Every structure is written in structure tokens, then in C-alpha cells.
Length: 441
Image 1 (tube, rainbow, N blue to C red):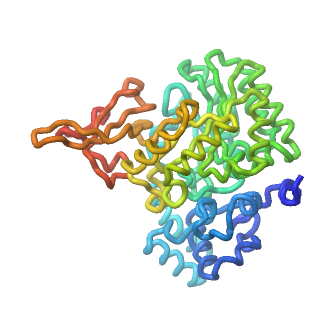
Image 2: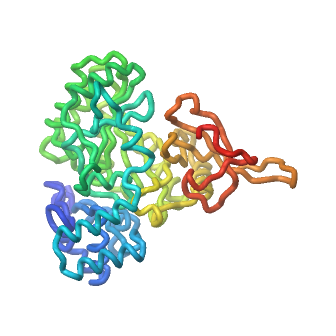
Image 3: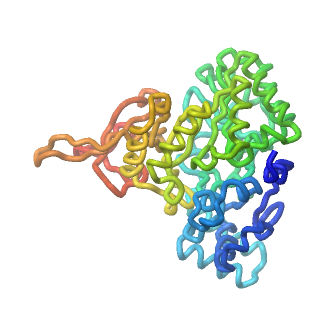
């Protein structure tokens, strides 16, 4: 065991502006100017900030800061707020007003940032026996999302996270549920459901005894149509010691094996955003231990400006994931929430990145789908730019299709949008061929 691993494997020391500590406790932070440190503090009043010693010591190249991708992925940057928003927060902090006034200013900015995109609160939360299930989302027939209340934080926060409101403490912004009984009854009465996805936050922030309480209750219920339990997690990338040296790591792996032994497939939906997250000895060992339990690991990430908007990065990441036995699953488009203006990549460029990377990998990597927008009607894949004949000659259009949809009849159906090199989301697109609206509107 290396000296570095001995140092950091005992516990995930967390650093934040509000929370268990302060980012100024990080020794490397002194490499930043006082102005850079101040900017992080200002922005982190709006966007939750949390990082741990593994990310700081093993993933960030401090000689490349502030341009290092993992630094930008975890440390808030000034440009994540507009000039007006940053100035307002900065002025408020310097005026030495009370916490309540700071909170009021910050929350007003958060409300401008589309905190619940794609209708996830208005359209995805199901009703059961007259009550809304605030810890459940059910957008697609086959899959129910479950937000266990003890899993609504993470080992470290991604600056692009579309679920950033989960961590702000704002009233009415958090999805969470303590009980599984209602979830089970809801799933039993919806026989189309084959998958339950534990999400958050990060479910693997929970102690194994807590997670096992949820999972074993579901297993013991004997839901006849349940086929898969999924766990959405960034733990492999941000705290692989969850599977190696945490005091309940062995029990966690035994729980994974138990799910498979009881006839249910366990899929770890791992969030890897950059190849460096796959490079440490700790993550490589953790991946192999998970695979030995019989669980599968599927990988996904959005394509993000400043982080991974390069086909060579994606090609290297997919190849390394397959080499370690993972299954590339999704390239997403960054959702229209939070600091979208900082991370957004135009749809046409995202497709070009995907296509160029896809051309360089073997067939076993080509399980990946994308680039995909998780928008209000469903998951819309950008298939590419096509040229079609028109009265004035050849005309460019953007070809799209649904990978998932609120209406199952929409899935797999291609449709066309006017060519728009600047469009970054489906709302920026107009139907091609003079149509008044898309078929699903």
C-alpha cells in the first residue's frame, strides 16, 4: 500500500464552504491567488461545493490549475454565474448583512437557474392513493427512480450536477423518501416496472446497513416483474475506498452479490466524466471487486465544455472503461439548469465529438448511446446532420430520435429539426420542412 493510499484511505475528509470544513483547509489551495479563493467562496454560496481528499490528492493536477478538468469539475468557477449574479452575491457578502439576507439573495438567483428541469417535479412525481410520492420519480414505464432520504448527499459535488437543488436546503427543492413500503406497493401496482433505480445524491454515501435495509426489503417483497436494481453513483470516481477500506466495504460487496444470488440483476450506474477518474490503482481495484460480485458497471457522463469536449478524451475514456470490464452506456448533453451557460456544448458539435470518438473504438465500446438530451418529453438522441433535397438545392437538417419517451410510441421514431449550429437544447430547435411543431408537441 502506497504512502498516499495509507494517508487517504481511512476516511473521506470533506472540504466545503458550508459543511464539515472549509476549502481553505486544503493545503493546495494556497497555490491559488486570494482573488481566486474569494471567487470560489462567492460562487459556492449559490452552487453547493464539497470535495474530498481523494479528489484533491489523486485526481487534480495542481500544476495545471485552474485549467485542470477535475478542478473545474469540483471547484466552483466565477464564470458559472453571470456577471450580474456574481456582482450581486459579492456585494451582499461584502456588505456584512445577516445570514437571512444573504440566503434571500442567493435563493433568488437559484430560482433563475431552472432548479428542476424537464418537468421532474411537476410531471415525474407520481401519485399513489391520493398522495404524491416525493421520493419517487416515474417518467418512463419500465423504470422507477427512488431517492432514499439518507442518500441525498455525495462524496464530492460535481459543478455541473443537474440535481444541485438537492443539496441547497431550499424548501420544496429536495426529493427524498424514508420508507420503502409505499414504493413497493406502487411498483406492485405498476407491472410495467422492471427496474428500480436508487439515485440521489449518491446512494453509496449511506452505510451498508442502511442501504441493505432498503434493498433487502425490496427483495423480500417478491415483486414478480422486478428484474433489475440500479444504483446511480459517483463513488467509483470520487471515493473508490467505499469498496476497499471503508469499515463496511466487505458487507457492501456481499450485499451486491446477494442481489444477484436472489435472481435480480444489479447494475452500478457509474458516473465517469474524464479518463483520469479511471487511472488510480484504487478505482481499478474497486471495479474488479464489484465485477466479482456478479454486478455490471455501466458508465455515463455529459459532454462538458472545459472538461471533456474533445473526442480524444471520450475515446480514451470508453476504451479504458471496456478494458476494465465496464459497459459504456450514455453520453449526455448537459441539462438546462444551473451553470449550463458555462458547460454547454452545441448539439451539432456534441454529435461531432461523439461521432469522431465512436469511429476510433471497437464494437464492444459501441454500446454507448448519445449524445442524448434528457428533456421534458424524453431522452432525445442527436443522430446527426443530414442533407436532404429542397426546392433551392440541398438543405441541412438535424436528425433526432427518442431513446426513451413519456409516450412509448415515440421511442425510435426519427424526426427532423432545422439546422442550427448554435442550438444547445431541444428548446432551441425548430421543426424542419416548414412544420409548425414537432410530432410529440
